[in-house]
Amino acid sequence: MGSWKNMTWMMGIRRMRTVLAAGCAMAVVAGMAACGSGASSSQKDSGDGIAVVASINQWGSVARDLGGDKVEVRSIMTSTNVEAHDYEPTSSDIAAFGKADVAVVNGADYDSWASKAAAGTKATVVDAAKTDGIKAGDNPHVWFSKDVREKTADAITAAYEQAMPEQKDYFEQRHKAWEAREQKVEDKITAAKAKTEGMPYAASESVAWYLADDLGMTDATPSGYRNASANESEPSPADVKQFVDLLKAGKPKAFVLNTQEANDTTKQLEAAASEGKVPVVGLTEQMPKDYDDLTDWMGALVDDFTAAVK
Image 1 (cartoon, rainbow, N blue to C red):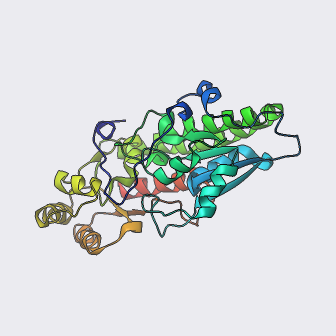
Image 2 (cartoon, rainbow, N blue to C red):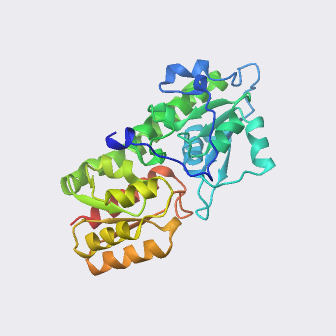
Image 3 (cartoon, helix red, strand yellow):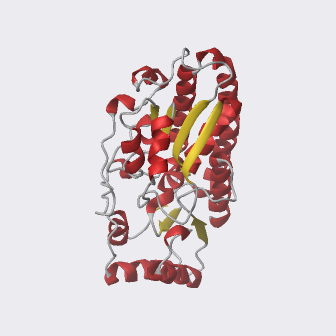
């Protein structure tokens, strides 16, 4: 997935480090059998639902779409007012993992509190980042990656089939329906690349890096600012000035702004983008309430990127 796979994504001291259970990493559907005890068919009667807990709402929406009326999904984080990095789970949040048959976490140190809560429980754990070999230190915003979305959906479906094998045909049909919706997003990406391939963009944070990479775009964010952002440290005045000058000159074809992390610096950058007539693509880390489905959200963002790059 490009240079970010090799670039250290250093977490600030405010983030908890996690111990991810390697046995629960599901890079492929076949790996599901090794992940926890799960819920066997003897534990599940045909009238019972599979209890699912997801750390963030975007993965919760995928879990719901794939499970239909056979699952009961609880998403812990559903607001754009706080990042998963900084979230402090309640005792009820932690208890939900202990009651779950399937737990879906983002991984890559994004939601270490959730990975820790799921470890050691009976739940079959789906670690989205691990499905594509993305680890702590890599860019953790993996729901923006088409490959991760596909592989995570495969792993969730396998977990459901393990928990309720008598409903395998039902889950396969749900998976096919989800794939059809995801394919529409990927078709949009393919069509958009006619405009976006090779186009430079700059970003206040590298939140949507995977989506921009899928679109074939190049990250023109000044390295000093980008590294400071990745390390959760303040960029130097020189770094900010370099970024401001770049935007005022109109060199990037789009400025990607994480509106969830607005501050004086991002406002300065947004003003510079306006002066340089650089289109702004605003987005958040958590799925906004305007969307009930991860694929719909991704499809809308592809449209935003396409519109920005003229």
